[in-house]
Image (tube, rainbow, N blue to C red):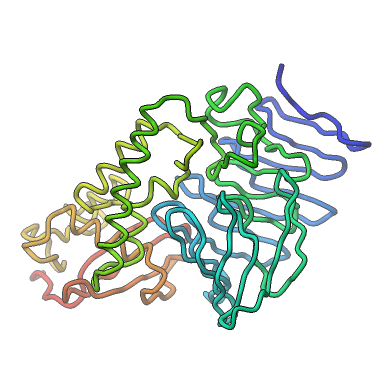
Length: 384
C-alpha cells in the first residue's frame, strides 16, 4: 500500500515513481533528483525554488522576483532578502526553535505561540494585536487580523501563498488535506503512513523538519532532559556575554531548534545528538565543505592558505594563536550573522565582513550561502 491520496472531491491527483505529487487537477509540481520541489504551477502562476546542500530552501522566485532565505545554524529562518536589491524583507528571532519576534518594514513585533510553538498572534510595541490566526486541527490558518505579512505556521513551516502549501524543510505540507505531498525521507521510521503529519496527531506532536520519528525509548527522554539542562545554562551564559552573537546561541541550542522537541520528532537521534554534543563541547562549528576548508587553511591551486605560518606569497594570515577550529568557527559565524556588513561580489557572490578580536575578517559566499573563502584584511600580507 502506497498511501497515495488520489482524489479529493472532484480533483484527481497523480504521482511519480518516487511517490511525489506531480499533478493536482490542473496544477503541476516538478521535482529534482533528490525529490525536492523545484517548480509549482498553481492557477496558471509558476513559482521556482532552489536549495542548498542541507536541503534548505534558499530562493523563491515568483513573477520575476527572487527572495533569498537565510538560516541560522539550527536551521531556523532568520532573514528574507530581496535578491535584486539586498533589501531586508523580514527578520526573525528564535529561542530553542520557538519564534520570539518578527521584524518587517521597520517595525518589530512580538510573536505569541501555543503549546507547540505555532504562532497565534503578533503584537506591536504598544501591545496592540496586529496579526491573529486561528487554525484547523491540521494547521489550515484563518487570519482574522491582518497587519504585517507573516508566514510562519506549524513549527518549522512557512506558508507559500502561491501554492497554499507549507514549506517544511525536507518536504511540503498541505494543510487542506493534513498530509505531505511527498513521502517521508526516512521511510517507515516515521510511521506506517509516510505522508501523514506527526503520526496524524497535530494537537500533541510537531514535525519541524518534515522527517518525523516518534519518541519510543526512555533513553531518548534522558538525552532530551540532559540537553534541556545544558541549554538552560548556555542560554544564560550566552545572553549575559558581551561577545556572544545570536549564532552562538543557535549552535549550542541547535538540537532543539532542529526538531528534537518532546514528545516526538527524533530525527536520526544518534547522529544529531553526537553532532550537538560535539558542537557544545568546544563551541566551534565549521560550516565550510572539506574542500573549502583546505583552501582557506592550506591553500590550493586557486589561492587561499591563511593559517598562520603557511607562508603563501601575497596572502594574509590569521593570528598564530588562532587554531584551525577557531579560524573556521569565526568564518562560519560571520557567514551566518545577519548583522554584519555585506556587499555584492563578483559572479553573484556575497562579501561579508566583521571584526573579531581586532582582526577584520572578510568572508566570500556563494549566492546560496555556501562558504567560498575567508581571510584577514587588516594584517600585513606575505611577501610575493
